[in-house]
Length: 254
Image (tube, rainbow, N blue to C red):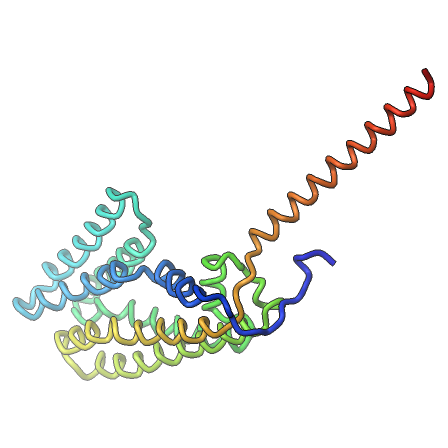
């Protein structure tokens, strides 16, 4: 049995920096403060302009423009653009949908549908034994999918976190979809902006709590490197033995 096959005991993390490592990984995965700003700013700009002048086209262009500007800033700073790009695509879908229907509220509809689908995905994948949050954070923690069979305590933590994300997002949808039908554009927009950050922070905090108490992740990359190093050492030793054997045979023949 290789080290890649050995199971990991379901024990509590004892390393003093485990919480800090978990916090740093979550910060990286979800974009931190800057990612939150990039998520909120386009929608905030849209609803602010629309509240003032009720101009759908100007509001949509401003929201899309600031999204593109955020991507340009990321590129200029040579920083990761995944969060900014996701914001651009979300805003672009909203702009196209609102322009097609002529209803300003439809600017928010694609994002609301995405939130609903994501909330269901968290719940369904967890019920299927593959919690979505584990798929997202596994590469960040350099454990990939090792938590599925080798780290049951960590899988349990990922399941709890995924349920938390799913329920929080579905609760958010339970507020927004009735407003889509009953409220006007500005009311829906301001409520949506207000619900951008608090539910997200709650979900991230609960994820941090669950993972900070879970067993440490298995660094599969380090294991693979160790296996490759051991294999190279075995091959070198085997080659050395063959050279010694050949040299001894030549000496006997001489």
